[in-house]
Length: 166
Image 1 (cartoon, one colour):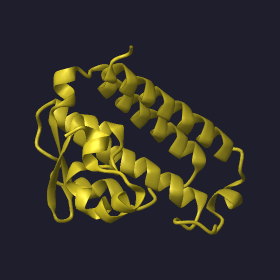
Image 2: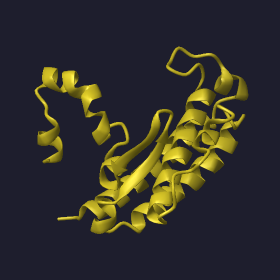
Image 3: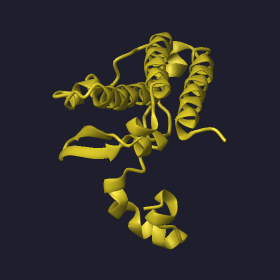
């Protein structure tokens, strides 16, 4: 059976592959189609892909800082300024490949001990501390946000203990 560290590495490769396929498809769009107003959470494909990239920068930076035992980025909000740093899909594709390679490098370096390490994530309300294994498993499933999903979990018949074992 493959270890959790190997699983997370394969998921990092899968993430890079999915981004590669998505961005290759989006690069086939004309610039007008790329920036066109869409009905979605973000107003365009360009805005959506820029958001995905800046969020990756934010989390990968937090992971890298944790591994190298540096404090959280003092100006982490800079990753989101400007909100859409790239105008074209080709630019986005280049930058996404770079951050995907950074995530793969992180996952290549993982050990069981490192997975238990705390990652400090700057938030608007302060620093959120999350175990690396949980952050890599899925960043929207953070331990200290359990209260935010408690009602949903009750409705679904799930529990934090059932999912995480503690």
